[in-house]
Each structure stands twice: as C-alpha cells, then as structure tokens.
Image (tube, rainbow, N blue to C red; front, side, top):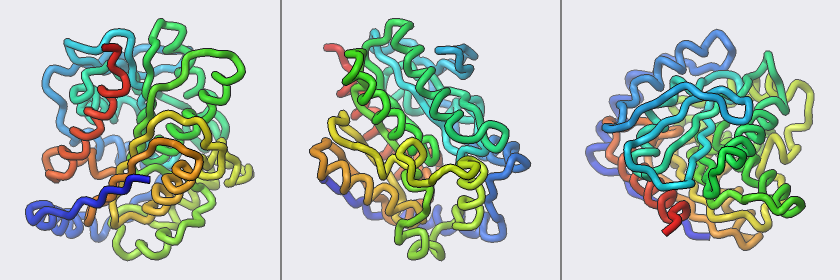
Amino acid sequence: MATITHAISPEDRVAMAELRKAVANIMVTFDPASRPMLDEMLSHTPPAPGVTSKAATVGGVPGYWVRTADVLPNAAILYLHGGAYNVGSAGAFRNFVGQIAMRAGVAAFAAEYHLAPEHPFPAAVNDVMAAYHGLINEGFTEIAIVGDSAGGGLTLVTLAQSIEMARDTGEIQPRCAVAMSPWTDLSLSGASITDRAASDPFLKRGPISEAAARYLNGHDACDPLASPLFGDLSGLPPIRLHVGEDEILLDDSRRYAERATAEGVEIELHIWEGMPHVFPSNVGTFAASDIALDDIGAFLRKHLSSL
C-alpha cells in the first residue's frame, strides 16, 4: 500500500484555524431538515472555468451531466455525492464535480440517487448500479466511479458490485475509482471515530450514527453493500483515496486501503495533515484542495485515456 502523508502548509494552517472558529458552535446533522443547509454549503464551491451542466437521466436515474468543451472520447465519470445517505443532491454538487471534470478532461454524470429515510437501503445502491449500467448502454467504454463521504463509500460498493457482475456477464468493468473521505464502515468500528472526535470540526459520532440507522432501517451495518470495508476486494481496478488526518472517518480509509492492498489491489492513500472531511471541496480556501484535485484529475485521465 502506498501511503502519502501531506504536511499542512502555513497558509492552510491559518485558513483552517479560521474555519474552526467559524463552525465552532455549529452541529452538523444529517436529518432531512438539514438538506437545504448542506446544499447551501456546497454551493460555495467555485465553478470551474469552461464547465457546463445540464439536467439529464441515465439508466432511469436523474442527475446532471457536467462537461468541459474538450473531453476524452468514450469516457465518463459517475459521480456519487456525499451526505450520509440522508442529505445532499447532485445539483448542489455540480460545481465540485465540475472542478474534477475540468482537471480530468472527462464528462461526469452526477447521479441523484434516492435518500433515506424516505428510501432506505438498498435504494441508493440500486439507483447507482442502474446509472452505471445506463452509462454502458449509452456507449461509454471507459468509466470511473468517483464520490465523497457516503458517496465515497457508495463508490466502493458500486466498484465491487460492477466487478463481480462483470465476472459473470463479461460486461465493461470500471477503469478506476476515487473516493474522498469515504464512509466505508457504517458500524462505526474504526478507532478514529473516538481518537479524532476532538479534532474533527464537522462530523460527530451521534449524528452519523443516527444517519446510518435511518439509511439501514434495521439492516446489518456490516453488509458489504452498506459497508464496503467488509466486502470482497479482490480484482478491483486502481483506486485513489484522499482523506483528512483530523477527521473521524480517517480509519475508514486506512483500513480499506490495508484490506485492498492485501488483496493485491493497486491503491494509493493520501492523508492530509490538519484537513477536515472532504476538504477538496474547499477550493479557494485551502491550497491542499487544489493539489488534491489536481492529483485526482491526473489519476482519472491516466486510467480513462483511450490513447
């Protein structure tokens, strides 16, 4: 397993201190009532130059195509947004997806999968698999799956499911995957859930435990379709993980990377000192965000290029 630890820059240390002050008295929750708040937060991600978005449906799943003018032919990114399976929307994440699409030079479809508690497990998994097969049916032969937080966990679920199905059917397999601060263990058994509790400015055990319960609706949290950490990781394509060192989900990435490495998967884990949950979305606030996104873009282009 290749693990790369990035030291925080002096500028980002100052910016992080200011952010901590700003959110010190805010408790981030993931109940349906908080959906407008998260959407508003994500709307602050600046749009990438030359990127357009358009509402569309792929495989029966609504969402948005996010494109630059010059994209790799036959290649697509399936983007899965975060929000603890209870909040978040493809529309609110369009600017963030655009930052990735611009750097990769690849068209991205941000899927509007169903949310809990109205649509509990496995609704999100079913939606995303439908969108993945929809991309194949539309003629895309080189597909990457990318996501953040719960969407990062869903990315890794979808990756394993699509590889398993491809073994049986011979259909196209994803070329690679990227997960930012992925939630890979809905049972919350990682040591960092406790060890990083004081350092994480956004995530707390209580709210994410409640969100997991609403999503699972009584289902086993250790089911690999809910928690990819516990699934079959053999035969997966290259994976890139980015996670902040100060977040309670740190061990969700570290343990997943360790398990994937043991199965022979090409995986690279980037740990960013002092950074919070899904810090790449903070473009314009942290220098680390641009550096991480540049790495993600280069990784995607490398594995999706048909040249």
